[in-house]
Amino acid sequence: MNENLDVLLSVAEISVAFAGFAGIITAVVSNNPKGWDKGNLNRFRLMIFSSLSAIVASLMPFVFLLNSNQIDWTWNIGLLGFYLFGFSAYIIRSFILARRNLNKYVSFGVSFLAISATSVQFAALFGLVTANLGIYFLGVFYLFIQSCIAFVRLVTEAILRPDDIQLK
Image (tube, rainbow, N blue to C red; front, top):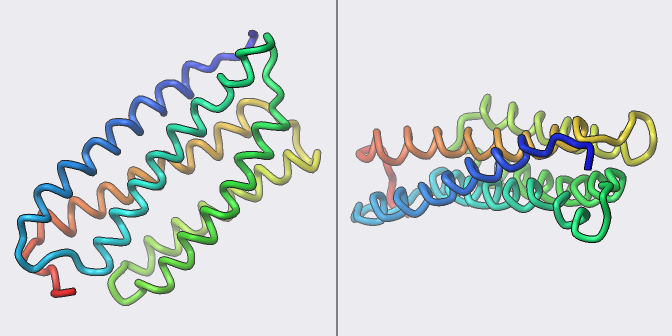
């Protein structure tokens, strides 16, 4: 193995922490009698999905190392690219459905990052750029950044401003 995969393990560890914090946030906010509004529910789902996705994507190259000493980055990038395509479609759809409860600038920025990360994966899959750890990491890093943004927005909206939460 000649690749430096420590960065993927670090992203997986931090993503596990975000997924754990999601449980704490759920416990704190679920005590509020008003419940969750659509925006916070959307942020929570995105944080969970992107954290778990970052964990799986960070650990996926290690599966290829079980039977060989080389990682086939084309397969990893292809699998991640198709997953990011579906994930991007899901988050853009969820942004459109909850647009009244979300910040449009954040939603647009995250959608742009999703489309960019997915495009880079497909560019490497089709041979426009070299498929390697750097290209793969861009997709994993997008999932990590998505998780961070959803976490920060959820904390600021659900915990720091609990009086603004609307009834379902």
